[in-house]
Amino acid sequence: MSLHVTPLSSFSLKQWSFTDLDIEEFGDRQTFFVFLTYGHERPDSRIFWVLLESENPVTYNVNDQASLELGVATHYAHGQYQNSETLLQLRQLINNRRKTPHVAVGWWKWAITHLGGTAEFVSGLY
Image (cartoon, rainbow, N blue to C red; front, side, top):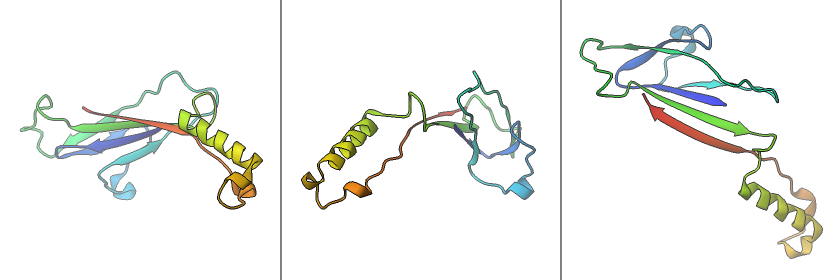
């Protein structure tokens, strides 16, 4: 899973719960990226926090305008969610071409391999 944290509206990232954040060392950027990974025994939930700091705290109303865009991407490289319909069709095509390479353009039976997975991305403004 990857997490994309983008402060908006003259906000900047001050701290978060993933690690000690030293912007001087880490480097200020528009979007911060966190990659979270686990094996077969995944946690039921991920709890984290993000602290933003505004350049104009007196004039900003959080109800009028978003201060953060948060995006989450899932990556399935193994297991039941690894294959999409498109990947299943591609695997079937590769298997068929290995059996009948004369149907394809050229003799590339030996050169076909497949490594694939699926991903989803969801984002929101907060």
